[in-house]
Length: 259
Image 1 (cartoon, rainbow, N blue to C red):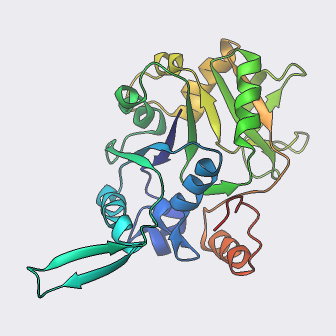
Image 2 (spheres, rainbow, N blue to C red; image 1 turned 180 degrees about the vertical axis):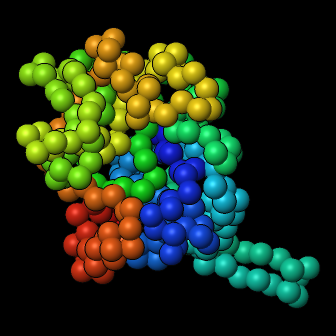
């Protein structure tokens, strides 16, 4: 099953870093947060990725082009016609497709543009700026049990985001702005969708979080999986520094994989 990662936005709220690189390439512990996200999925056996790139997309492509070289021991033998010898190959077992989905394309439009790479099959979708210890197999099992087009992961994060309303059956009933009376379950990505999702996206101007998800709600085709572990986005330098401290402590909650 393929994993689609949205990685094309400008990242204006963390401009101290994103002026030089796409936000998913901002590093935590010396590796892009995009790598951390992929490691979570890879831990559970999901190793085929489609990255929806846009802003400074060349940085993502160049990083992956050099990843094999940077993670292996090498010998440069200039006495034998500049021969390159690779030792101790440490690259991941990943197949990564990086798609330039446009500079100003909205999130829904980016997803629509990678339809040909997904094909007619169930796929996973998440954002390239947040990590968590999501139980991916359990999420997938939940999605299949509900027999809906889509499932989003939800998290109790505080009332500074838009709010998800969910019925006892697990079906999403509404998205709306927070109020003092609302709960605080938010959409944290780590989503699963059937290929019919593409029928709910008109084109480049479609905002996935508004038009697309709202249409799925109206059709009663969206369910919510509640995550009770760790999750943290990286919208600001303060949040980046928080994640960095977790990593440096050796107890990063999202690090579900072994070294």
